Image (tube, rainbow, N blue to C red; front, side, top):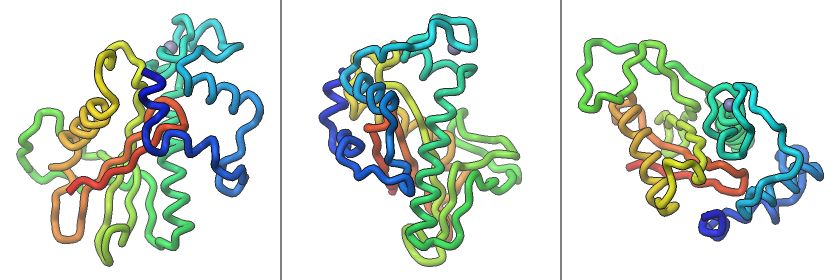
Length: 199
Ligand SMILES: [Zn+2]
């Protein structure tokens, strides 16, 4: 499974990226070693014995546990990298976790649609796809090695998580003339990344 993901387009970009602090592409010795172990599906050495939740610590558990914080850390790192990249690219109106418009009695097709009045997306960029139009981005971090993902191909996993985000946000961020919806996905290891505009 690790090899299937390791050969995907872009999965080796982190190995050949020029190490620059300005771009956060500098890995210290243990970061590099751990990333290489994860790339090949091996268990990195010197892992802690227990997770903060009390369970035995494994790389799979770390990515699924809502207490340990790794999943949130990975999600937030990806979000910030896109935020930073958009700022550096010259977009002036870039907003982290923008609040979505409150609901006004709208009825949604999907039960899993986000109906929270305080709902936020991860990133909003004015003019990303076209002038004077706001693009909303949302990041998903998931482990392709989770038990629930066993037997699924990489493309099936991408699609599954993308569909979940579509059901959650697409109706909440309507396709009005000034708004376009888009999803971002990032998997377990830093070498896996994919960005896909949703028509
Ligand atoms: Zn845990």
